[in-house]
Image (tube, rainbow, N blue to C red; front, top):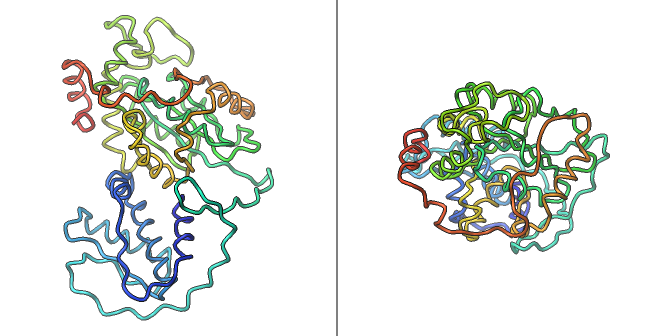
Length: 385
């Protein structure tokens, strides 16, 4: 559920009589540790504080003394909450600090609108009935950009998101497609679609600055949220090397057309250059991405699916466990997207993904040669640790 829906669920609870301590479950803690932006944490804290204020008239929150938040983070949190809730809030301070004098009670909170009829979901939480869809002329689907290396399994991730009804998923945009050939929002004809997924791939640093390429893609596609999708760098490197025709040849021109003489592992940069690009993107993830999703969390163990679900729900995509059955075929997902391309024209396909449920392989993902591991730690040390 989105935070807004979670807040509305909590608003239906009886008003607490005194101080309330809300424990944070493991999946929230993991999300907060790995989320790309401080503002995502702030929105969670602000949502909980809004609930308490709406029920008892005032609210505050504190940050543990052993938190790794900096003073700038705390200031940003205070400013953001003031923007969200207006005056009358206690400023967030480290919990070890001397408490400030109580703030004046804020004005009476606005009445909460009656909740829409609810239905029970597989998670056991109620979910609001869908609101009437707006007219097609006013309807704008939410756009998600997935950025990843080839052979990282992100076509599989794009296919997973394509399991959601009314989702256009461009599951595998070819690596040679330049930013200026990608679709602009006005190029597409989404019709009834609620979501548009665009998966783009990382080129080697021999082709150009990976951050500049990402910025150009964002400028063109204008995503609402951008996701970095990663796989173990050593495994990814081995897969790229396995799809190189000649280890002594690499494509440094990246012509915007099909070229088969290199193998896709060496197309638009070498495997080594692509891992160096990934290192740069990983180091910039806090500023360049809204979330990070790992291939290992999808195929390693089904118990880790909740981490992906929480992450995607937090950025506004309604992923749930039912989607992991992968009942929609790649062909059906591709057809739905192609019928809504409008005047957009770029090379893409469904990727090399199998049909049906995921093939879970546990820890075998890490079975790679020592040479590949050494290369990964050299080329992409921040992620390969």
